[in-house]
Length: 229
Image 1 (cartoon, helix red, strand yellow):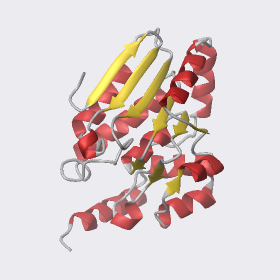
Image 2: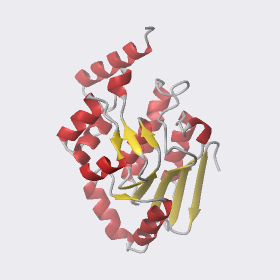
Image 3: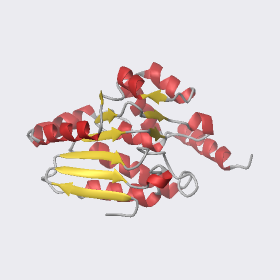
Image 4: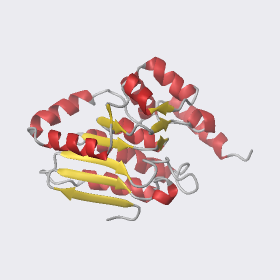
């Protein structure tokens, strides 16, 4: 057990539970770092990862007061997302309530997403004046297509659970038991075949690294966001 997190292993299942309900499970540097380390150190007999949140929200994003604009947080966030994507085990996310900002990025890093009917997600950088990393932008476009990605990003559109299903961001509507049943099914499969399938599916050829031009735009957006109004 880590502060604001429940990280447990039950046979073939690794359970990552965001446990900061009073703050809508907003992510801190310590939380993203702990998740990355937990995933990176999973024993070989773990075959599937369940990602979920306690309380009324899956994840309200980064804790803007202490984390969102810091280089340390972003480094930890990217390490966490990379760990979820690059490890050989499928990641099943169960989202209820809001999944905003870094919370939606967790869904993008997952292999299969189950959403409660009342769940919704949003990437708000355009509305807030923040920059978003290249990986999340391209991962979203890869999953839902460029047209939907443009509307979600440039118009900061909120995506309902049903719309997420319609555009391929979510794969089923249900509850946490639905997600657990899916995890049990995946855990029953031979792991080497699963590892090969996941590796090829996630070989999109894009990373968090920015070109010089994109880095300049990224830095300028964050500088403007930090400036007094």
